[in-house]
Amino acid sequence: MYATLRLGIYFNLTDHVKNEFNNGANLSAWQKTYCSLIAGGIGSFIGTPCDLVLVRMQADSTLPVDQRRGYKNVFDAFRRIISEEGVVHLWNGAGPTIMRACALNVAQLVTYDEAKERLTKTWGKENDKKILFSASMISAVATSTASLPFDNVKTKLQKMSKLPDGTFPYKGFVDCAMKTAAKEGITGFWAGLPTYYFRVGPHSIITLLAAEALRKKMM
Image 1 (tube, one colour):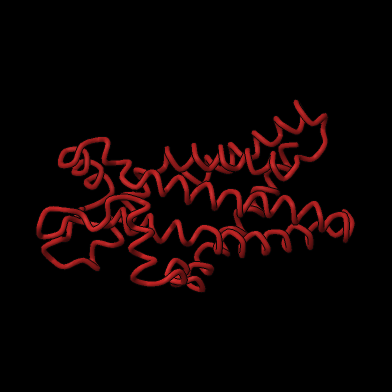
Image 2: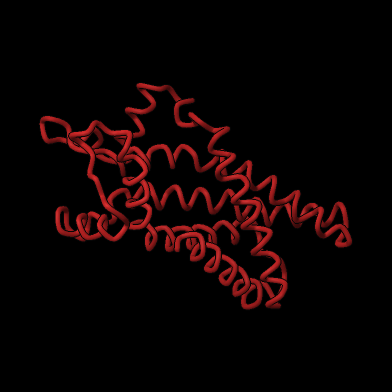
């Protein structure tokens, strides 16, 4: 849901800006940033409930037995969250999720479009495949580096459970970020970057190349 929405909104929005406001000219870096922020924000807000369930189910086995939620499946998770916590809690961590999505979208899509345009000027349109692959590789590195700190905080907020005194470990995004920096140092925000890259990088490359191929067929 999230990936499809953010990409679909971005490509449609940039095409609209290009045709309606730029008279067919390429978008400026600011216009691309603006479009990617809108697309990332809308897509992540709608996709947050699914992301919340995913994080909780993946983290459940790592928690102490008495803290595990024991969701049977995705549908049971949605049902129990709504009945036990309320519908609003499906958007727990929506703030950092949206911030992560905006950072990821800007890093991935703006970097990709900028790299593609600059490489086209350098190598020429006849090297289309080489340009697209190189631009997607550059984008994958930028995406991983820019989004991991937000992903780190988002995951901690979404999988946290109540402490023995009934309070939560973190009060919000800022509190979680400050405690992470104090406990792990600034580099702690990028803990697991190589592993994260191998998760996000190939996905980013495949997604961008597939989206590019689809856009050409539709034009």
